[in-house]
Each structure stands twice: as C-alpha cells, then as structure tokens.
Length: 155
Image (tube, rainbow, N blue to C red):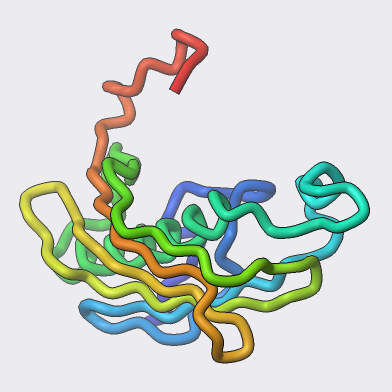
C-alpha cells in the first residue's frame, strides 16, 4: 500500500511543500517539490528577482521527515499521529549552499537518526539538479493537539 501525503501529515496547500513521495523505507524518504512560479510568496521575496525562502526549504525537509515519522508510527501499529501533530523542536547545522528560483524542482532526502518516545531526530538534504542546496539536522516532537494554545495569537 502506498503512503499518501495527505494521509501522512496534516499540512495542506498553500503550506504543503511536498508534491510527491519518490521512495520511502523504514528509515529514509526521498521526496520532490516543484517550485511553481505562482506560489504567492515569490511576489514579495524578492520582487523582480524572486528566490525560494530558506526557511521554506527547511520546512519542506521537515514535512518530508514528518511523512517518514508517520510511516514509522504506522509500522508500529499506530495509525497516523492520533490526535497529535509533528512540531519542530530544533534545527542544527543548517547550511544553505545555493538559491532556488521559481520553476526549479528540488528533491529531498531525509533519514531517521534515532527515535525516542515521541521525538524523531533526523537529518536531511535538499538537492537541485544533483547539487546540494540545503543540509540540516532537526528534531520533531509529537504534540497533542489539545495542548496547543491556538487562542493566544502567537506560536
């Protein structure tokens, strides 16, 4: 059975930065994202010379990692995140090597380093035309939805 992006993670357009799962195993995932020139943020980042925001490159890698985490949980008999959402708790050793432009297509490779309790430690690389664009390490924790205070107006 193939894993659906929409079944694996709660993210949805316009804040979904994974178009396709190319390959997934018990501890690795390979995904793809096409940077559509119509993506709204390109209008303001930077006008006349738009580039894909580095923070969204990180987000795309972390979303790929969340899909992998969902698969790991499913393999353990837990269907999806069950009232939880994956939230980032840390990013380490983030390196941006090149800029991405509208129309570029990137591939993301994320691997599980370790999984303890409800925290997934991962590392990821984003590539464009075989060249590394972003490298990073990150941790994702499963947060209970009811514990998120969405009424405060802040993150």
